[in-house]
Image 1: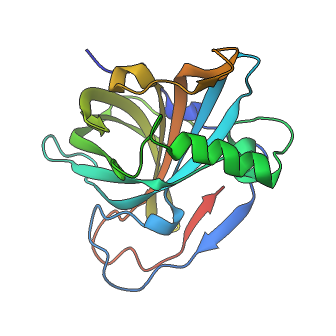
Image 2: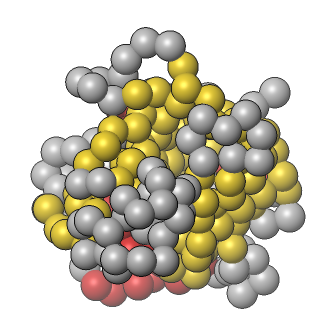
Length: 229
């Protein structure tokens, strides 16, 4: 059984994001390599009791994705120490209104990264080992293709199956891969943060989005990778 319900990539929010450009080197990228500076993950964390919803963003330490591969399709290694809560960009991405103060962002981030939740001092990375990335029949949104990514997600010391439906379009010489899924913290042995005897806290289930820029073939990764954040 998959750890989470996979969602179509068309659910990736795009409203209110600023455009930025990341210029890539002219060499050093092979087919399947990710352009890390423009590849991001976002999460919408719900609330319980008198808590608040939060938008979270983070980056990757390394990544490789071979679209079309039926085995050994790659691996995404997430830098859990880079995850930050309630930046303006993250809140816009997950469609949360308003902004958080700097002190609130720092406190929420500290709670999230601390030993009671993500415990990044012990678990600095999470890994999605992708067994296959097979194209599915039918078109996605506009001219995008759809791929089913199937593999194993390791978060802290727990590994569970994860299947994600991703949309892929060619943009400025790169494959832009976008998808989303739902994840329960307790499935990975993580206790959702609470305080005031449970009166304030975050929900167990969250929605996670990813946008990854992948070199389609050797020699094509010399162009710019544009991403919306």
